[in-house]
Image (cartoon, rainbow, N blue to C red; front, side):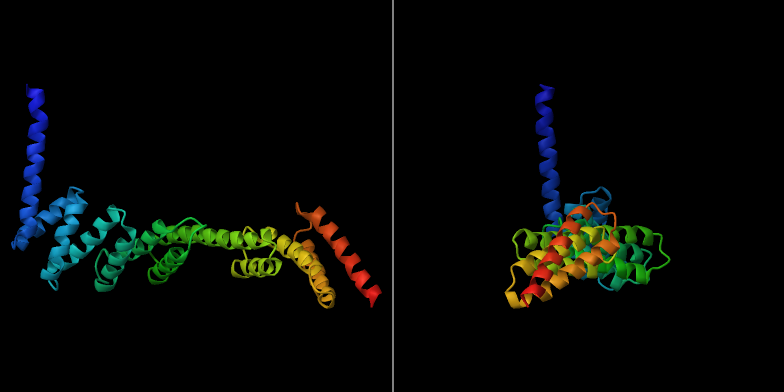
Length: 267
């Protein structure tokens, strides 16, 4: 009998709590709302805390409680994994309360939320760029912070994601046999990320794509483009004399020289 009553008792308590919360939301007792919002936050009931803090922000604007409400409001969104809003509210907090003891943390978390929201490299990387910009801004504004080292680590991680995105785009053009677009995108990759781990692959593909591009060119363009291929091959060999691509590069080099010799003979 008791076992059957327990679920009913729990249900009744939950129903009562829900009813009391709804009454609180409609109440005009802002002090009580503030007290309960903080209580909900500390109990990690972030959903209810957010609703109450949202109502209280305007009422307590310009008061001593405004700073705490703004900080808890941002943090509650962070804990709810709503990183877009959390980033926005942390940024607002850092701007509005620059002398707060929580200002540095808020500035960091604003950028960190964008890092957490950064999508896989196959998707649009706008948020990734925002995260890098935010983290760099944090480092510039708080050079002595203990969070700087971590911020630099996150920037490196995000940049690798951007490099991978750029590489995937170039590889896609190469596989589609759009060699001109492939060359441009591989060149942009090495220019934008000079220390990229994909540099060897990109330089090899530049040379290989240049060869195919020259082959498909009109006759009056072939000499110029095979010469560009030869230059790209020489550049690769000088940079990576013991590459895994060396055998293929030397074969392309041999073919390129033969093509150039044939073109000179025709002239």
